Image 1 (tube, helix red, strand yellow):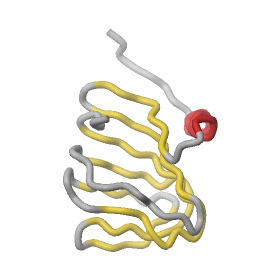
Image 2 (cartoon, one colour; image 1 turned 45 degrees about the vertical axis):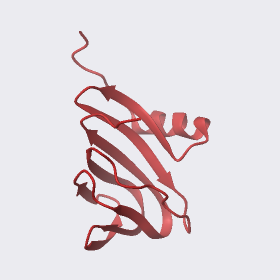
Image 3 (tube, helix red, strand yellow; image 1 turned 180 degrees about the vertical axis):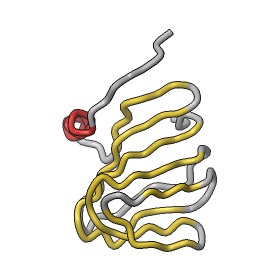
Image 4 (cartoon, helix red, strand yellow; image 1 turned 120 degrees about the vertical axis):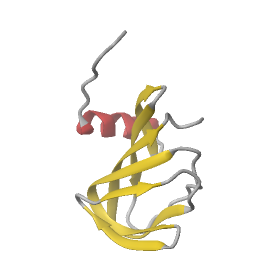
Length: 109
């Protein structure tokens, strides 16, 4: 049984870029999963509600996030919790958003 993993956000972002996708997972265990999500300035966020609780940490960028009835500006250092099943998305992205995303339990594929 593996007891620890060490990651680097720069390496995770490099892997995401190579995949050509907005989201790239770098950790998956039964109780949680994690990845890097990037949205370009002026882009749209196509996500829909998830079956898992979710936490976002904005690594860099600027925009807004709507989650349920809450609506807030987000930027570097912002931390957002979204409960399972809640409609949410980033919008008005004025600077590329790079977000660390944590799902608990692991995101259903």
